Image (cartoon, rainbow, N blue to C red; front, side, top):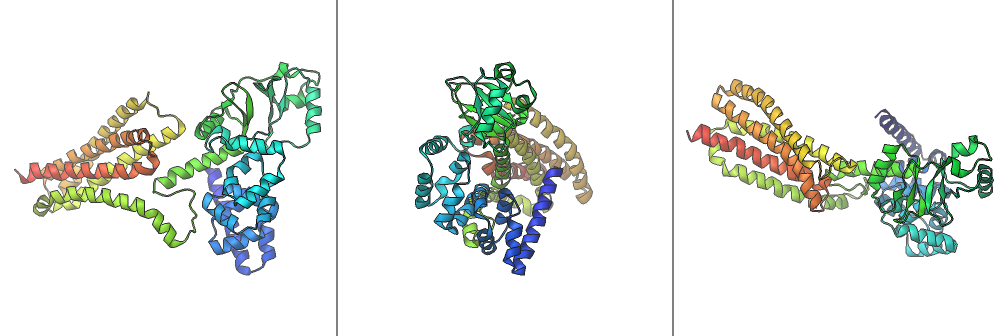
Length: 455
């Protein structure tokens, strides 16, 4: 949490300095400032700038950084930056990228640029690029870099060291070599620390580490992130179903996955897309939100129609109009807490078909306990306000019913939506609000109609 806050503060300071430099009109100052940063930092700042200033800054970014910046920004911002770049600049920028990064953005480039980029690559590089692009982007195959350093088990560490020196260029993240047999089948890992500290005469087979399993190429990227977390990995091998080594994944790629997952959960809960440009044109942004706002309007009208059916009750007992928002709000909060836990559990693999019923029983118990506690508090407040013990009783029962309903709905809705192939983070909140609003109205005003007015 502390590191997150520090990162946010650093980005804010950089943005302030960049804005001051832009306002001063001294381009050399802007150029010096922006090119002293990493590609990821430049990407963050570009996403934080209005489009007019973004274009000015993008023109001042050094060409050798362009490719890294394009990889880091979201899809919509990337499309705008590509439109603002010349074909020659894009071709040169793509030449600076690793195969896995190039695969991520190649299809976003104009056809003419793609042709030039492929023409500039040798046959082996084109084959490797096509190979990486054949896997889904959100899988281990889409994350992996085929450029890995491999050794065989029957050579000595002295040979390994000479091989590394002859190779010259090494991957940026390099903590281990992957050990393969003559056919390319993955056998294990050789830590670079062992290469540097053990006797040069030792064979690789004596030091091979088989404790970490390879990641299958079709593993979802969210599961890859979990594997890195559970085993404290810096890099990991990727294999096909027959155990042949295909490439490697490094921690920098996994950090990107974790960040994207976090952005996705936060933004989709509000009906937004993490790939949208924060500074997109007003009309464009408004149109995107219409669908979600329209869906929310329909669900709100459903709750209002239930309330409308009890209009005579509200006319006779005005106190209900004051108190029923409390019932709806309490149920909504209780449901949202459970919903958030379920969605997070699904994302981390902690929720499955085997433990769903146990989670539902636990959340039901939590809902009952919370309902009993808060029903007493709210019933007392209702009695103090209006001096009506019957109203306090109705309030207490309605709170218990809605908190239990909210807890159950929060646990069930994500499971049902996932089985329907609907993203729970996107639709769960709206569905939950509708359920708790409708049940809250039925419980509170329905009970009031029966207990307070009918009698």
